[in-house]
Length: 531
Image (cartoon, rainbow, N blue to C red; front, side, top):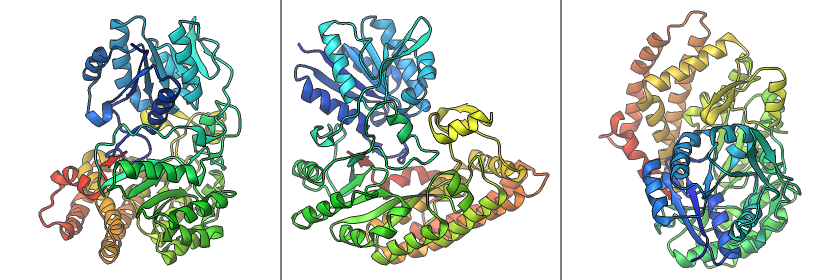
């Protein structure tokens, strides 16, 4: 029997995508396909703890039945550590000779912390993992020492040892299509995540993409060809004929220098008999110079764009290294509205550099561009090790380790902003069904209306939601201006004032809706499976 390889996805909220989506781990999908291609004698299994809702004990039972010789766990964030620690402890207690490896953003960017939290593991794969894992399995199968393999880290005599960096894969078209291990459905509600690019041409001060790939050598920004992308789409559609929706997870699919690839994609899709639609991520700075290209992409299926707007303050945009101005953001949004491409966007109300004036500039931009996600009014930037922001702020001793998903926090630039942050935390803690569940439901419902072409109803509900969200923000911001704030009293008053307004909008969607059933209803208004 061949060497047994097992990948484990922990049972924690996923990456930056919506946690309620049952999203396959795309990194595991690629690794599994690569090992399957290069090690045909290996038996490969995947346990997705999140998809199946497994406890560490239940996952361990499945592991015992599989009896693998190598286990790899993918940890995107530190939040995945407790579940994975418990599982790794169970594995090590039962199996002394099994090789356990960690990979992903958390162990790559916080290698020392990962090795301290996981003394029971053998190795960490740093950065891009396909070739490193392949060589590791070669050594384990041959029972040879693996500690000189490029791209690894491990613990030796209480010290972290990192081997030389491994070169990145240059030609992404040579990679096999990822194993779609969560392909459990076939229909219009399915959204397929696609990788068209690895790396990013830009270096935003808060982003972890560049620091992650700096653990390797070589050119970090690489493209799959349009032909290779469409070949994968065709392969999936042949297996699942009802598939229509595809989501590219690239940081910027139409970044400078990539127009030839995008034009080729347009040409192939124009000649294709398939009726598909797709979503892409891009930067605002890529919209203005690509108006004609976006129109062409829209004609062959581009329905939505996710934009990294992040701020409405010129001061903060410079600190973020976004290389855009606020008027470019407004112009870019107007272009998308003219073309008819739906959009959503990332936004950070609070950063380590935010002043009171920056907060007010942010609110003004959100009011201008609309389609507001409630959390945009309160979202705080996280500081991730390896980023420019981390390097800058750590030098000034401005970082506070807060664990979990947040990595590092920081003090506010003003007492008013600090009070504002506390008010938001209190609202979420005391009334999550209203200011968390209901607000999220309204936003996702409006997105779904646009996806299904119900534009008039979407616009009506978006207008109502935007106004309500803005009023909540304004009350919190005005309250935060007071030197003495009673958190409990204010949050109670805020809930009394705004919960009927939330319910009023919810009842326009369904008169039977109440706060206690919101969490059960959300999946009906967004894709619940991604493959």
